[in-house]
Length: 311
Image (cartoon, rainbow, N blue to C red; front, side, top):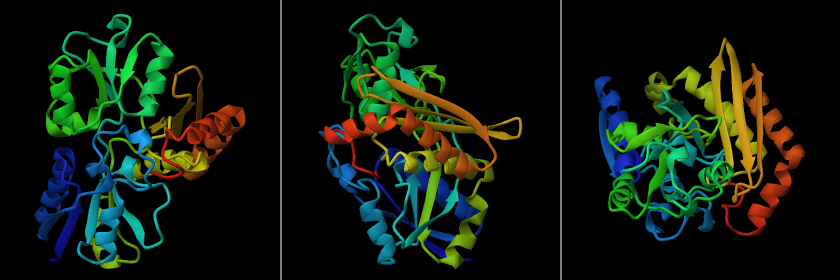
């Protein structure tokens, strides 16, 4: 069996993900080593992500380690991976997806509708902020950075009335005690690829690809290929107010997507069924652009409050 070196960010969630993949590989008889790599996004912790404006802020240093053959594979949250990888890399596997939806966490309140006027809600995602503002324009939205523990601690300390996080991360870490509401995708469309892990390798490394083939989940790959095709069509990075959620319904792929003004004043929604994942994502993306999504995104990029083109 092979000796495989995994590269990962050092956050609690990233390490959970890397150890999870390590365990599955060890079960197959492989010897696994883990290398923790600090990324640009990990070093900048006091600024809202949407204002950083750094391409590949959670992946660049890890890809450098791959290119230099210091590691053989990298475990990423798929939503952090650019929709177009550099030519030297490929996604060898997309794992079975955890719940892709966002969740409402609070000490006192049971859901978005229960929050009082002017309640302070924490999120650093323009996508979440825009959709929250669309249903509750009276809320006071504040940036929230840090790992899952830090964010939950700030909530428990009373700095926020509620915070919005991804269900997947909390489920994986077993920290669901403050989850009061799983927000329906119709209210808050998730980020493209949310809940899935992407295993990145050097392009053409067929030996490593073969070792990882068992991790690739067909349904997850189909759904996330569709979502990422939409994101790519819109030229959006992971911090742009774009949501995409694809799932199989009655044998066909169904895609829900949004492009939103960060202040929630305008939310364009589109949903469609199809059979070809990439084609469905592109066609829905094109439709959103034609309906005014291009103007919204141009304004967002122009204000410098979003990552240009790719995450």
